[in-house]
Image 1 (cartoon, rainbow, N blue to C red):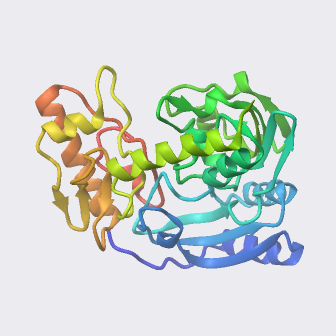
Image 2 (cartoon, one colour):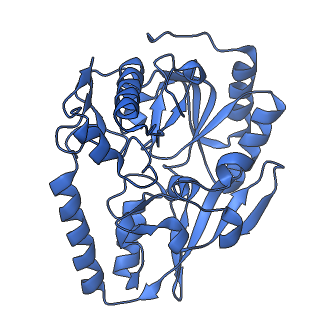
Length: 322
């Protein structure tokens, strides 16, 4: 695929005018490059990207997009996305810049959806609250982490989420209790029902800040030792298959270092497909397919991507499972 600049549709142009008139956004950017907003550093331009002023502004912006028939994407840190070389049709709503407030009430920590998980973990540490140490090295936001039930080192968001403030597909803002998130491995019910996380409350445990800090440093050392943090990636590219580990299967298939264009299977950790320089979404998709087919032929296991595919024509990609 190649990057193209597609003229804004009448619906997107009209939405841009209305958003400027209503002053709901801190920033409004037509034809905004998406590559700098993803950890893979891949992707064409979004037709329109906005930064809402508040949670209530998010609700108004989403309502206007739906009313105008404009597709929209909620963006956090872009840490689990592969964006099309052809860009993203419609509206991208970036939450990272504004929905990032935190507060503590007893053993509860409430954080805005746009707050980086590393910042949430650091705030908890400074407040003497334990439970988010595992999230300190995850490059996503609170909202994205809840959306996909991210996890590391034996812990997941489901272990600490008490409730979330969500914007429902009906346009109403409500509180979602932990059990209503439908958490499972790298999944939540939000991925199907269209709810948008605006903020999340974590139920944590009191502990000495020094002990929390030591645990965070231990986990970060393990990350630095094993993961290719010096190259752009989307984290683990494939989900853990039942009864095994994706990285081990890829490694044993002899795929470490395999490249397609600028996309490469990390030589340090086979579970990471990285941007080794100038990679396109087409490169990454082709490498993912190569990995899937090779592992499937060797083991009978089809690896399922953990990354989300967004943007024009991504639904037509030939990756075996999305």
